[in-house]
Image (cartoon, rainbow, N blue to C red; front, top):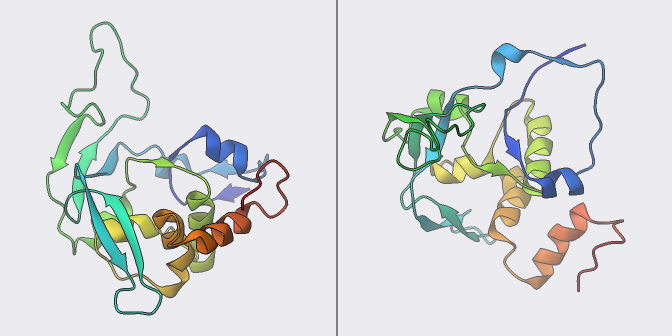
Length: 188
């Protein structure tokens, strides 16, 4: 069975340990669309953003990047240190070279084509996968926050996960969404 690849991403052990997924043994990914060497790297620093501003469901978040947007960069996924090259070629150590130092906020073709350089974590990635299924395409609410894009109401839970919840009740609701029958985690 041929499958479409939604996105390529590095995942944390926590994601692998906490997520429930199945391996499709007959699935053959279209490898021409994965393992890209072009990525979006957020700017250094951090900033506060308000999702759904002016709505009764406003959500405050702190995200990476001192300003909206990011850089288009080259990053070899299969690179590993050697005695001759112990560090990546770019001074940041995160990627190899800058292709575009400032992706325009309205460059939707670039923004939609490339992934962020960060790691995928639980439960955000699970919610992102759900949203990809809902929209029948790859979507990334965090990337939309990074580029100051408008956010559909369906992204609300993903944004709450990014924010860590606005209060104890909301944090518990988020955790219960993903840990409903987990005996190992007890939250008050």
